[in-house]
Amino acid sequence: MDRKLNFNEIFSQRPDLEALKGLPRFPVTLVVENIRSMHNVGSFFRSSDGVRLEKIYLTGYTPQPPRAEIFKTALGATESVPWAYSKNPSAVVQGLKNQGYTIVALEQTTKSIPYYKTHFTFPMCLILGNEVDGVSDDLIRMADLAIDIPMFGIKHSLNVSVAYGIIIYHLLSIKPQDLR
Image (tube, rainbow, N blue to C red; front, side, top):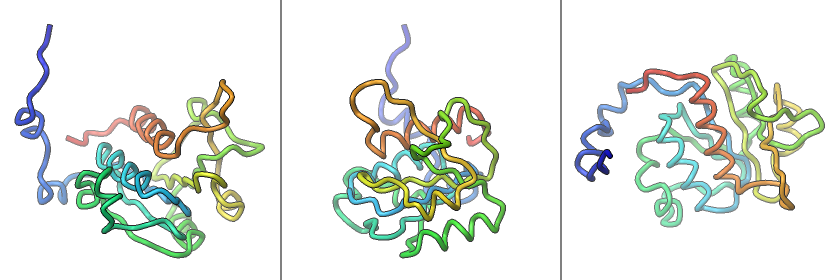
């Protein structure tokens, strides 16, 4: 049986902030639209750090660092993941679309495809929406495709930060990169 790695062994395998600047990034940019929970925002940062995401755009009324509630969940990832704020999510998405990004909305629509049956192209912009209302109609219209996570119980969706974790690690599994 293997043994659990100790704290020093784990961290000796990780880059520091300076080394991180020169390492390749996973070709996905996250756009979060009107997220209410600072804990969800912190979780986006933490999961994004785990895959060395290209960038996060916080848009609309989504809270931004520095906030204690974000830091509590992000655990330092606000320093390791590039991010920006924009009041206007449509302008951000249009700019990424103009740069050749595939625009993917994680949302239940009339044409959503289960995430595990979807062919993805990169670079990609992944859009996540408000915890109650989801992705806005404006951004749905701008998307090249919509994906969803099938639900089989009585609830219609997962927590947005949990859903993001599922999708971003699925994307990493289908587009493996040498991120070490």
